[in-house]
Image (cartoon, rainbow over all chains, first blue to last red; front, side, top):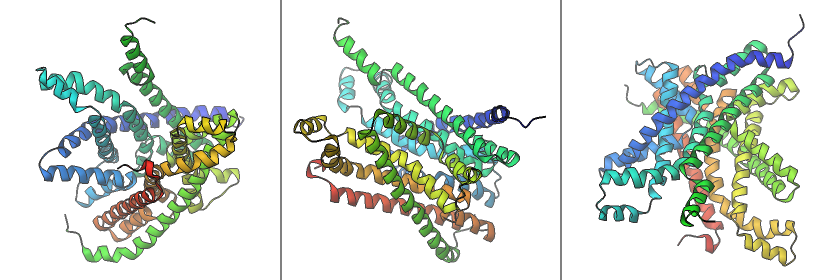
Length: 235
Length: 223
């Protein structure tokens, strides 16, 4: 039987790479979603009047943004076992990535919140609109539109950062790549295939993010809609 | 949990000191190389034929769309089979330089775009060539505006440099891991490791702010 051609080999890698990509996407999704919730909570904490809470939030953000993710991952994986807690690699990976992303999303949300003119909220209050209504109809849509590009960017960063979890033996795309190299001795083509899969994932997130952003009304599509409405729909 | 043993911590300082120097060496090589590559990429995009603009787009899209770890594996594990075998430092420095070069190129592109078009039109109308406009009008202003962005990117490069530990370059992260494996103490090495990176990042941020203030043109300084 002839040795498999490049195309045949690549086809053989595909199922394993798909499995790895699925794990990568799982870890990334958990990190982004949980990171968002935690980041929003952190933002609330940092705006509190209690100095201890605000200081703790600031220290958290400073630590998780100022140190490498790899260091955070190693600390969260090895330190619990020194204290007697056994944390499975996948859990440690999701935890580290969530805590890391939360710090960045906190700052993204902070910037988004700051971009809404205070006058709008004051005007709405003077009209007698309830605080909750103000948040839901006035602040939230604008915050969502303002932070969306940064959120998409953060999502792409999370997917790229997720490759780091391969060092603590989580079976993500990068680790599957290393295992394939160990069994095929073809590092160049395997890792390039891995790179292509990552590229496809990040490009897909970018495309989806841009499309959703346009639908929310941001960017050129949003500006066009506003101009059309202002002109009364007439050319 | 045991309290932090200061004796152990102090005993780690010499090893961490040399490791920090290696991290800095990697950082310096990567940022210098990256700035050069990024500048040339932007220059090629600005002044070259449309083909160069497309090549620029491919370079920045591919190198920013794939994790740094994968790039590192391709260079360190993959290139030897194509004839180029690099040491861990060489592989890490080269990959980090080309990787950060893509980000620096985008920083330069943004700063170039930030220069008002009117200045360029006026210069061209006055008879300056595209190259002269680039060197005399755009470079001085754009590079000054780029300083804070470059400092920020340098901090990101510092954090990314921790991955050089995966290909066994004995910088900070690998040194901490080695000490943990040999001495069975977890808390002090990792605490010191985090502190080292945090201090280095703060130092880079400080240097960036100082440089920005020194090079700022009056009109750019926020009053």
